[in-house]
Length: 406
Image (cartoon, rainbow, N blue to C red; front, side):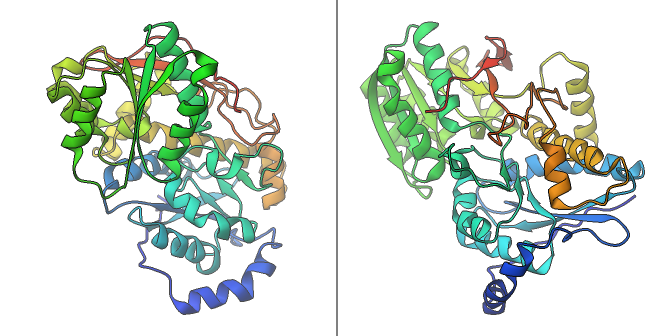
């Protein structure tokens, strides 16, 4: 078996920063970097194996490892095998910048694949753009790199829709199907939460609701009881809670204080540990709504059930729904690699990029209608709403195009 390499590093050294200045200009033009003579492709990634998001962030890349291990064990893709060098950034933006430098300069990565986090990726975005680094499928919204559709970076692709589109979809559902007329928002400060706050605030007139309570808090906030009481006192019909940390505690505190409205939540409040907490708070049944862009583990389709079994055997601690995202992205990479090299053409970034942009409206793994041939570098444009029924996630809408990005 071709093993996958995982590494952890601390903050970057002075020598690393100096080498960036000397080497980045030439490396940005090196189309053959990251592929060895024996056809091993080195992908780099950062993920929080430590810190407050260790379980959530690592589950996504574990799902990707499952796909890469399988293809490597079968002999590779047209003779190419895939190695992943992973850096633990602890979800600390300073460490993420050091990780990006290390992966690009020291590990000679072919590209950065499925790095975790909008806040951390935002911190590394300047380095990525300045060095023209190919970056595929950040585990976070397209907002970081694609906020301006007319000026998209040429080498950056996302499989995650804009956060605002997900917010639009669940707000629209809350108004039209749940008859919610007043929606509040609780969010973490930083790229992740603030993009959702802007979306909710900016779409009130569009979808016909009143903007209610607005609470933003820092990632190191600890007074969740106070926030929960404010939510209960405001009596919104629904509350969008778009947080990286503290969301479960806020919801629990609000329920304890008597909140009766609906909850609209993001992917970060998915996962095994979150669902265990939801089951403990029985009042949450049929009141949590999730806008999502892939199938979840309880979708009755053969590829989902096969994945659930496989990930449970190889990575038993992984949260399955999060791992599905990484697994789908890995399958997209494998498909593009196959198309780029099946006729014997040597792999380069330009050849891979051209192959990636032939993937048009296809189901790959657990996803629905992935396309990279539409010119906007964002693969997922469809989504559906799920409801927590007290024990599991149940779809309440069919997959449909997400509301237009504004």
